[in-house]
Length: 352
Ligand SMILES: Cc1ncc(COP(=O)(O)O)c(C=O)c1O
Image (cartoon, rainbow, N blue to C red; front, side, top):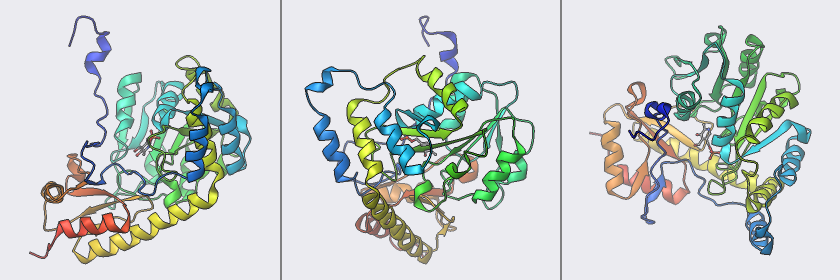
């Protein structure tokens, strides 16, 4: 606390990101990064952008990237919004849509940034419990609200909500904005972008941090009705006109254009996920069904915090959340087959 702070800063509870250790030898399965690296074409495009032109500001509208996203999804570029990571896109969306009289709804077990933005923007919220199987119950969201947000697949559970269920949520709340946060959709789900034309209250957000392996570049996007996009542009241009730098614009556009690399690496992650699930189940873990690049697993006989500490001693980091309902789960990012094997070995014999 300081006498210089704006009073509201005293009450902020900031997001705590997963550990980014300085030691390079660790097997890092804690922050849902992609083990395969970005498209070589994206790297080439970024290298070419490191030039004398950096003395010039980038395009404030990032049109080259908007067009690449629009092409990829077959939508008009005026339905696309871009930001410095989907975290920034989400922050602007909270500011633009969720500062309402009625509370925002999101699942009780979900992305831990959601309540943080509520604190920042003074948004009242209700955390809606997932059911016993850790699934979203559509009917629980059919009540008065000032907006709805949920990840699909959900984080940190990895569970996917089918597209018709997403559509039902949109139908039940036609007067509020529903954000479907698709950070992990490319690892086994079907995007709700196909619904954007029919539902003016739908905003779909995505990131290049996971399936396109560009977490270090910080690029996120939203697709929605042009009226929603206009609100986001207003907020963005009242905050920072240049959220994407010259490297980010061309690198992200090249990553979208390189479908072949994207599809191949996503398939590798999915195949490794299925193999790891099988191995962990063989060790007695219960693993929630995952459509993401991570899994959420608990062992009936072993304490999750203890297991996290055990594998860490052997150089493998996974994520453990201290939250009540999920305190016995570990969230494990899918690595390369070798990294996954290192985890399996570090877990050792769990039969006793
Ligand atoms: C559900 C969810 N949404 C959004 C993000 C933010 O991703 P980024 O800001 O890297 O685009 C994450 C990151 O882990 C996430 O898990």
